[in-house]
Length: 144
Ligand code: SF4
Image: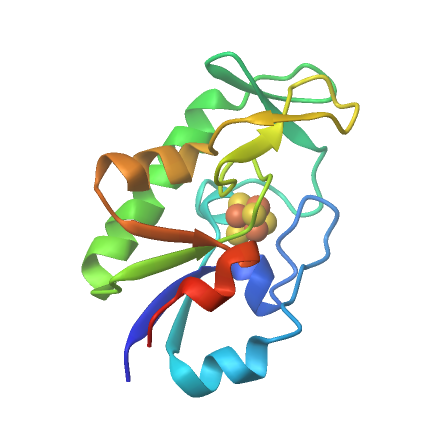
């Protein structure tokens, strides 16, 4: 069965900043088609759960208390990329809008809910590695 790396929150892990998850309604169906390998770059970085919400501001990652977590985000993303390489997963399914896993669209750094074009830190590194990436809005494009 083909492997698929997946943002852990999409697989039902309670690793989101608010202590919850974004479990996919189609998770069972996905598990019938793929061996899922969950990964959470922010957990790998050692961030607590729950935690204050974080957004990308320029080339920094800060929380809504203006505390800087840029280094932690890069460390977690690099560890997650390493896991991806070791796992042999051809593709990665990512949670949209996240400052780690967002693909194509992220929050704009003002903590107002506004979104802008951009990618999370993990996603940026996966793109550099030429990984095949999808957001949860593109499930139908993933080939088993
Ligand atoms: S870092 Fe990625 S996997 Fe972890 S909670 Fe955020 S979106 Fe989900």
